[in-house]
Amino acid sequence: MASTLNPYLNFRTSAREAMDFYQSVFGGDVQRSTFAEFQVSTDPEEKDLIMHSQLTTPSGFTLMVADVPKHMDLAEGSNISVSLSGDDEEELSGYFAKLIEGGTVVEPLSKAPWGDSFGMAVDKFGVSWLVNIAGTPPQG
Image: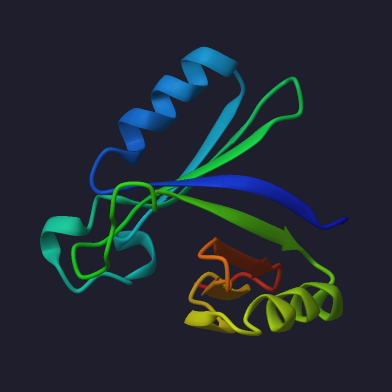
């Protein structure tokens, strides 16, 4: 799989509603995962919020959205990130390493509960980046 670059929109509690809206605008198929599905929220009020949702449209657009947990900052203007994803670990790890030069690691690039490697960073220009390297899904 080739690496891809996509917009990633963040919301506090309205990711599901936003993604339904974007699907009504662009068409296509939506995939959703909640925080509860991967047991990654310690707040029971957030269990049904969207940890990750992806819209793939007939025109070839890919849009990703998520709800940001209450314990993480979400300021006006910080609700978009750029997502890099694919299965080329060397390529994507290299991008992550370069993006964090002079920037800030929010989440180190490491194995995630869903089986991929995942990391979050803010580069030296204040742009938020998500890097996801495809791995093996957990068995269960």
